[in-house]
Structures are given as structure tokens and as C-alpha cells.
Image 1: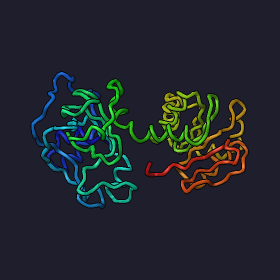
Image 2: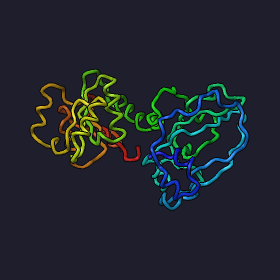
Image 3: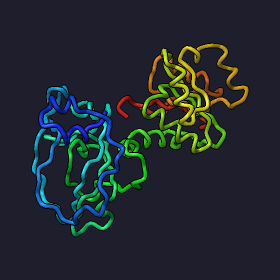
Image 4: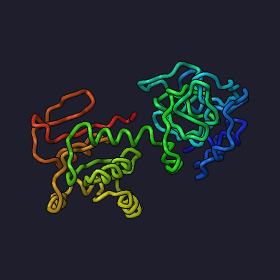
Length: 306
């Protein structure tokens, strides 16, 4: 789900709910159309003053936007997704909570409209994403400090750029932080069609890693399989296939995984462990990270709030 396109055309929360559509593929106006200064104006934002059910506490508000000065950067939001972590934050059960009232949205892609006199790293027309969670991206425009933003290339597909800050970063850290994987090594994961799972597939392929990707069975399983393989998945199997003795045949032409990524739990995580190369496992943290004393095999539990 995408927020910013709907915000521009909505004047009530009901209109907003009807208008939540995928963001346009347009990259927005050219940089030459922007000024280096900006007068105060009104913007639309999704704001919550207390924690609770998002459908009840989030309000569409017309806010005044201050003029840019000093180290400020005025940003026009091009696209902002709705991530489960956004919902958790509004509910008040996320690990990081902004001061209330707050604008919703942790992720998004924006284009710089104007910069203050002290800004040196950004200029009008640049694309930017939040440097940290809780920035508040569910608004048509906003003024942020330069240090709250990260500039990125503008040739990235819009929807990919808008979701760059959470799932791809999580996937990369899981692939490199817990095991010293080498090209040709294999990784197994469940919920492989999730946002993080799809990022794992693509990053692993770029690193020369081979992936076994577990998904739940469904009527259109072949379509899903084809889609994940187009992203770089080597094997796509169902939870049921993971439990079959024939699973061992898969390792006749590829090594057993040195890393397992679990975001499902229960029987699924147990089956992932069974596919790892032989090792005695030792719990080493409260985050569900397991490894053997030799440091050669690891499984990582993904938090549902990642």
C-alpha cells in the first residue's frame, strides 16, 4: 500500500482510504523546476495523537509547513509504503516510539525541494530516504534536518527506493553478520515471498550465494515460484515438500545450507534446522540466533517487527 499519491487527492480520511493506490512510476518534476528557497505553505499529513487502532487514531490533517532555514531540507514525498512496523508504532507496541503527536510512516522516498544555507550534502532535485525510523513519511511535504536524510541515486525504481530502508537492509545484515559465507555456499529461508525474503533472494544472488526458498502452498504456486526464480532464487519449495524425505535429494547438486533464516517459527523452523549441515547448536542470544561452537553453521530468527 502507498500513501503519498492518495494524500494529494484526499481531503477526508474516507477519501484517503478509497484513494490508497500504488505510486506512479513518475520520478516527479525535474530538479530545474525547484527553487532554493520556500515560503510557508500547507501540507496534508496522517497524524496520530495517541496510540491505538490505526483506523481510529490516525487523522488526516492540513498542517502548516515552516520556511526552510539553516540546516533544514524541504522534501516532497514521492512515495511512502505502509509497513507492519508502521502499524506497530501507531499501536504503541514497537521498540521505538516517536513523541506524540506524530506523523506516521517510517519509510519513503522524497525529492528535495529546497535547502537551507548551511546544507552542504544535498541540493534541490536530489532523492532522499530517512536515515532512521520514526521520521514521519506519511505527508505530502515536510521539512527535515539534513542529518535525518540519506541521499540516493534517482535511477532506482520508485517503489524500490521507497522501501529501501527496512527490508533490504535487514536482509543484507542477516546474510553478512552471522556467518562468513562464500560464493557457492547455500542459504535456506522460510516466508521467502515476504519483503525481507525477496530481498534475501536478490542480495544472495548478487553475492554468489545459492538459496533454498520455502513458501506456503497455494493454488498459484507455480506463478509464485516463477516470480521468485526471476528474482534469483535457485530452489523454491513448499512447507510440505520441506518435510519430505526426498528433500535430501536436493543436496546432491548443492551444499547443505550454512545459514537458515526463520520468520515463521514452530515446525517450519525445526525443519530448517534439520536441513543445516550437521552441528551441535548453542543458543547465544535472546534474538533466537543459534550457532555451533565452530562458528560454521547458524540460524537466525527474524523478528516480526523487522
